[in-house]
Image (cartoon, rainbow, N blue to C red; front, side):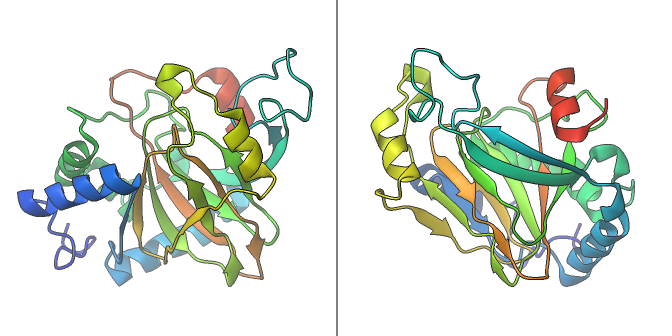
Length: 256
């Protein structure tokens, strides 16, 4: 794995270093591991992404920040129901080559052990369906990811290619408490109306990001310019045998 990961910067097997990572994630809700990949590995992923880009499935969706069906008890412009836009183009796990650095990283036992330790999980498993484990997302000029809360407790992403401008990851930590059923409509409205300060993660190509997005509202601003933002999503489950629903697969990927 030394051809893949900058172990000189990120000693994954070091218990003290992992503890520091865990504390940073817990404190800030986000952890950015800069220059995580070796330059040659990053270039190989960029080349793979460019070669497969013609197979990407593109969607434009309107959704509320909770990613839930509208609630008729509230008006259409209420924070519970208010529409935001997301544009997404991605290739799926079945199009990621067996020898891809992304595949090698996703499957690596030491990498998964590091993730479990930092995330506080006992084990991580791939998706049971053939599409969802590794996705490579493309956001050309004008495309964005609208404000939303995640359904899952953590997300693991790798920025493959940074655009000339835009494509900024913005977030508001712990804006709600999903487990307590707290929606915080006032806080969400303040963010949507640009009345609430937001944080931004400075992310460069080759950086690995761990993010807790279930209670932290977040978005990616529109890409600006002629360089497409490319982002790899490494999706794991905490239980074996879980597949993304067929409805979700048709929505995100256009196929099963």
